[in-house]
Image (cartoon, rainbow, N blue to C red; front, top):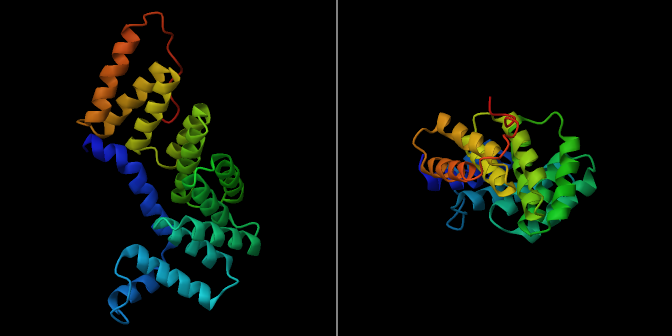
Length: 233
């Protein structure tokens, strides 16, 4: 994996997981295989919005349908529409974890980081029985929101929780290492960058990071080693 791929894989993962939250497979397949007219949406995002809007039209008081529509809007950058639908879903069902998850994602996209953290924490409390994909997405969003607040410690903790869902996610070790490096926790950062190479031996970004951090450690011989990063075993 090249470094550019490694640096963008987090966003790709989130986008694919949003689609997983949104898509009702049968409806999407029907839309793709049986276009109704020349005006039928052609992009995946447009098709997802179409089937999600139809689901809401068929069941306007279904909170899950509303949350799926919110996620569909978010996936194409229609943040105001996404926030409206997510809030509507929560009004219909205040215990809907997906509603709070999408609401938090929209708030993070809008730069409302404190609100995003609150919404995502609410989702976390309601999503104990959700899938590993769902928890991974939530923790990734939490990490980004905490980074927006310059709370690097909490961002690193969120990435550690993400690794609990996907312990072989090399990109998360890299991102966590970057945060540790910013915090000055160089031994921790070094171990995370080295872990990336156990999954992707020729990764350029991790190799460069190891050289950079190793040089910093050598320049500070009195630096005490930090505890081994959790999730690195």
